[in-house]
Length: 141
Image 1 (spheres, rainbow, N blue to C red):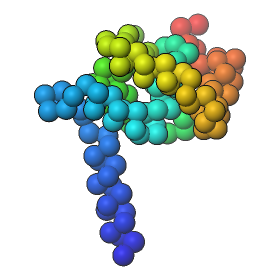
Image 2 (tube, rainbow, N blue to C red):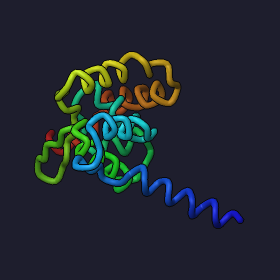
Image 3 (cartoon, rainbow, N blue to C red):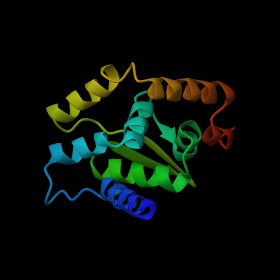
Image 4 (spheres, one colour):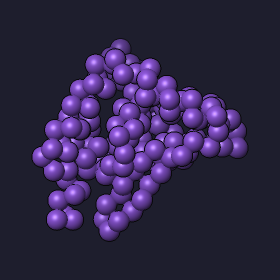
C-alpha cells in the first residue's frame, strides 16, 4: 500500500503547483492557493526584504533550482511576485499590490508569520548569505 500513498502524494503536489487559471479562478482564490503551499510562503517571506536571485533563494531554502523556479512561476502567474532578468540571472521581488486584498495578504505575511520557526531560520540563512556575499552579486564584482 505504500505505493498508493506515494502516488496520491504526487497527485496532490501536482495540484498545488499547477499554474493558476485567471479565467476560472478568482484573484482571491489564486492568492490563497499561492499562500497555501509552504515553499511559496517561504519564498514570499524572503522577498519581504527585497529582490533576490533564484540562486540565493535556492541556497537559503535548501531546495532544487527547478523546484524553486516552478514555485516562483506560480507566484508570478498569481501576480504575487515580479521577475527581472539580467543576463543569465532571474531576480524576483514582491509585486506591488493590485488590490486591497493583496495589500492585506502582504501585511499578514509580514506580521502574522513572524513567529514561525522555519521562517526565522530562513531569515538567519538569508542574513548569513548576505554577509558572506550572495551568489548572484559575485558576478557583478
